[in-house]
Amino acid sequence: MKHTMLPISDALQDRFEAFLASNRLVQRGDSVLLAVSGGVDSMVMLHLFAGIQLRWNLTLTVAHINHQLRGDESEADEAFVRNVAREKGLPFFATRVDVLSYAKDHHLGKQEAARRLRYSTLENLRRQTNAHSLATAHHANDNAETVFMNALRGAGIRGLSGIPVRRSDMAVIRPLLFAYRSEIESYASSHAIPFRSDSTNDSLEYRRNRVRKAIIPELQRSGFPDIVLSLNRLAETMRSLATRIGEEVNSLLPRIRQHDADGRTRISLAGLTSLDPTLRDEVLLAILRELQIEPTAHRVKALHDLIHHAPGHRIDLAKSVSAHRDREWLVIGEPILRQHFEAEVTVGREYEFPGFRFAVLKQSTLPSMYQNDHTHEYIDADLTGSRLMLRTWKDGDWFVPLGMQARKKISDFLTDRKVSFVDRQRVPVLESDGTIVWVCGLRLDDRFKVRPSTKRVFQLLYQPIPPQA
Image (cartoon, rainbow, N blue to C red; front, side, top):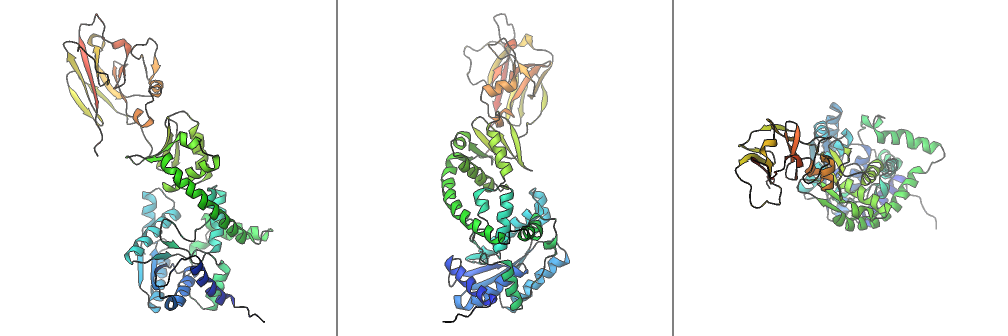
């Protein structure tokens, strides 16, 4: 029997329909929101979906995101997609987003800001239109580029698995992931499908464009003609492996990672160090992704190194995110800065400062019993000088802890007391004429203690104020 080869354009139509069915991306009768930029990839996707709309009984809606980054060109793209949707009789939604302001406010690069805004806006539109899924036009070459870039930055197994056919956290599907750019362009040409060209796609300013326009073509010319196919096969293998490891990571995260009320993420050091190194990497990568921090080998190594530093050591993970080593945790969140303040205090007056109340009061007699919470202390009033100052402790500060004769750095004292990195930033000290009298709420200086010869006594009060819920 003689077989007739299908033209590539017809073969693409058949493979598209088979890909939808085999991956269960779309069910008959579904409503699908199509993300259409106006470029060749999304215009071909729109054409393919329109071709099966009646047979699959689909409800199609076209969505266009105007990033407002290319002036008149962006406006023309929006008008072009609107006209195409009108010609096909499909509902159309256009949304304009302010990428530059979002990038500035969230300390992101322009491309990452555009990506986040695009997905969040499209997801809102999907819900608004009650669509079952949101279709984007990523294809096999996009997948290969993603795998290559992720490999270069050491993004782990999940990064090497490339672009997923379906996003697990959103109703996003990639129905063109089976097709190569050349096939899509051939299909557009044979069916006379109009499309717009984005001028920024030719700029080598962007990393992905350099990979697409320069690096991969050079590798293809230098003895790796099948690199795009090979990278897609690697992605498929890694995707299967990532699924298995991802299940284990998800089961481990609740035991290793906690979220504090102040928005910080705490990672158990004991939990991390008990893991196999590969699994430990994947846990850290998962936490970085969870916090929307780009997961790179450099950041994972920095977190590994932080485990072996002394408590209090800090590293920067992003513009507004740092990680510090506590005694039993790695803590990730906004950088914690010591709140420097200095205030002269007068005997007999009560004060309220951010986070605590304070007073130095005249005391006629000593109490018969001392409290053990260190919020009330007593000192020999005649040993104090003319000026009492309440301030934040500083590096290099020292005192003589009550019951000892040798001086001790306050930083070492706080470490020995296992005061957490966060809490130690808030510890004030009381000094008299430049000499520390009290590490407030923790320990008196032995030089100011009450003795049998003491004639006058001051009571010191330090009362932390719990944060309001």
